[in-house]
Image (cartoon, rainbow, N blue to C red; front, top):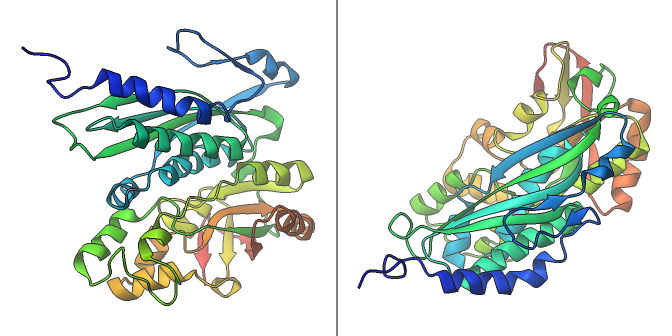
Length: 341
């Protein structure tokens, strides 16, 4: 007899996953969330936006990329959920938006309730740190397309910013300061190169390089630092011109996106020490510096461009919030380039 379960879809397992994740998702709420008894849609009370003169809704969508393959191989699933929030919500922070809510999508070869609950639990924990609500999501079982232990995740987020307070390149001026906020590690970009190095060298996930002081696999799954509330705190303090979320493409390329065509960012390599994990990967993989620069964040997860007179206070504020930060460079007259020297 033919059935949906015989085709590889286990509805009961999906229902069990929902039950397991409920308590963790409940922590990722905001007062504006309205419960939908049917569960088909996430509801958010938009009357909260009436306090804005001209509210602009900001939206972003992203995934975690091939980092999920390392999570699968190591059997650790909650950290990639946390990563997803960092990738989606911190893109909203770049324009000065307050994150409001997020939804997620998980595709897997087979629903293992505990695994799905761990992934969603990590997303919920990340949303709580970012100050946004997790209002819904979807888990899809794709037997025949994905192996039983394979999965991928994606998400979308929505935020709001006052039109008159929108951050971006048009606010940046020569003389402004560039401040770096430390990453927690590789974050969620460059893992195809990481996996290539693992596959073609003697470096293994179980290895414990002396530079790291712990297994490489554990280091590689370090969750992405989430900067949304730190960026909002800086914005409220005043003097912020723009932010740059340092993701795929590296520091210079992402910072250049926040520059006007009449200004450059002069960045000092000597202002920070590149974290050990990047040096380990570069050394074992024989990766040229130019390739490292355009693939990894190299220890800078977010950059802020602020008025020169606001730089010291910005550094003090970030230190008080527990975010390692430093003066990375300055804005000069130019042609819209960010240059590491």
